[in-house]
Image 1: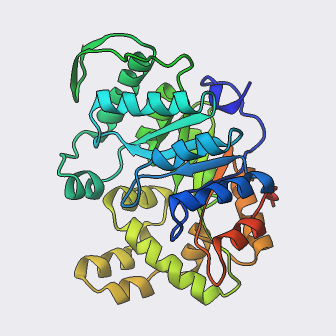
Image 2 (image 1 turned 90 degrees about the vertical axis):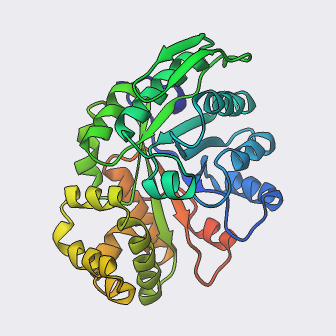
Image 3 (image 1 turned 30 degrees about the vertical axis):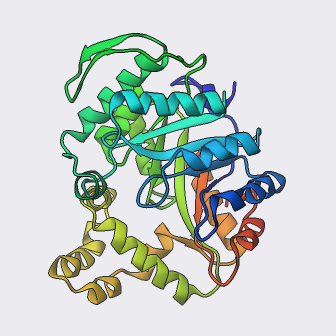
Length: 333
């Protein structure tokens, strides 16, 4: 049984090896050679995202045509920014382009992306993703959907090209409520911005043995000061968003991160950066030599991650050099 066709409750096979695309500063047209190189190096998965860069589907559509062996995932598409019908069409299109190779990642995103950038109300996120999963199950199966969900209503929608083998739906989750929802209604869970050891806290909340995808931020450099400087900037950008702040309070980092949150709220960005302890950066952002990074990523696997997906920030090297140096297998140690 392949990972992407698992049903909840079945045990995943050995880990796969993923990397985040598209790569910054490189046009999509140039990604063809990079996708070819990824396959040659032993990477099995590429996972896109959808925040403030490109949309989540286009980089995967190109990969579907260029590399027929790569597994393709998106982590994540927000549940709010496309209407239900259009979302079903987009997922169906990717599933048809890459049959058996596409994994659809859904999530709430954040109030920043949904409300501030897209002008859409960010209300009842738990119910919205739950309703979206249920709608997609029906729509992708070719059923006519005429239903009043709690967070939206669909009247008479049916896909003209239903998906023969609907892709698995992975739910991005942070705290217990959403993690448990993933265990009940999704085919996999997506986690990020946590340490390898935090996986042991998060995974039991899913309540089912379903595949776990983790996006892991990796800065391959032996210049620890540089890596921590970059890591601190990334941490302030993410962990001051309410959903991530609450996540880390739940994980037990409230006390060590409270000074950073306080300075950030006061508008003192420099003090906020300085308030983040080295040990927090070292836990949440993988850095060091290639071998140190590979071992650190391997710790996520050892703690229960099935598909580790590196988001690589190359320092003093090209992305190609980083791809080679970080290539699998990653040691669990």
